[in-house]
Amino acid sequence: MRKLLTFVLLLMVSSAWAKEAAPTAGSPETTPAALETQTPVISVTPQTSPVSAVETPSGTSASENVSASVTPSATPSVMPTLPALSVALTPGVNNPVGEHFVFQLDGGTAMPASDSAVSIFNSGFGIDARIGYVFDDTFSLGLETGFYDLGATTTFLSQHGLSVSGATANMSHIPALLTLQFNLGDPGGPIQPYLLFAGGLAFDSNNLQGASFNTGVTTSWTNFEFDPGVGVAFVLDKKMSLFIQAKCAMDFDDNNSSDTNAQSSDAPIILVPIQLGLNFAL
Image: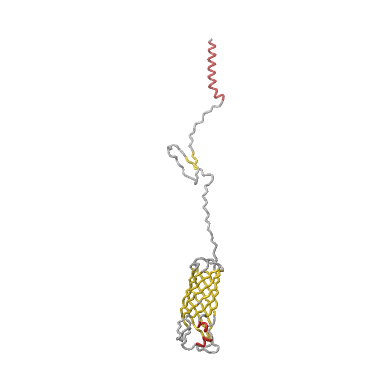
């Protein structure tokens, strides 16, 4: 009996020892990994522009280290494209629009039209030059001068007691005028009719070749002149136009039929220049 109790006791001790040795003999001893305190990382993706600041959320204690790392967006933000500015270009008209200077040059024939002028003067020629300023498509203002030469008839010579063989005479006429022009056509049209009104002074003189005037005879005068006219311009390009015009040049001489120094018995002396010319926009 005693041997039996000793055998049972040894069996129990060996079983307890086997249980304690089983972990080391069967598998390697594993030690649970220590829990590590990790710092939370907040990744912020900006919508418009990158942010370089590190923010600490409100409500966290000083011991908590919360870092905000900023990760730029993979696709850069694209600024909105501004709408393109488009300017509608209006095709230019044939003649320049707006204010500008003009220069005009013309020439042509000048015919006497009043009673006395017809009897003592032949048709002659004349030239004009004008510098002006165009205020709009309708109205322009300018200064004009010119030179006209009309040959004298034998009646003129006999009136002055000149019967010298081979003697000739002529009258020179130099106007200095302020000119207003009014265009009547559609602005920009290829054909521009217009009206003229000019006023100023006329410097007239009688000239004699092959003889001399009697002593005391007046041969030069300064008179008031008024010249209405009409014309039409043909636009060639933006800077130049061709025109034809006719004027009624009324030379108001100081007529006195009893004065031997009077220029003429006409009041006024009327000449009709018909001229062709060019107008240049400056």
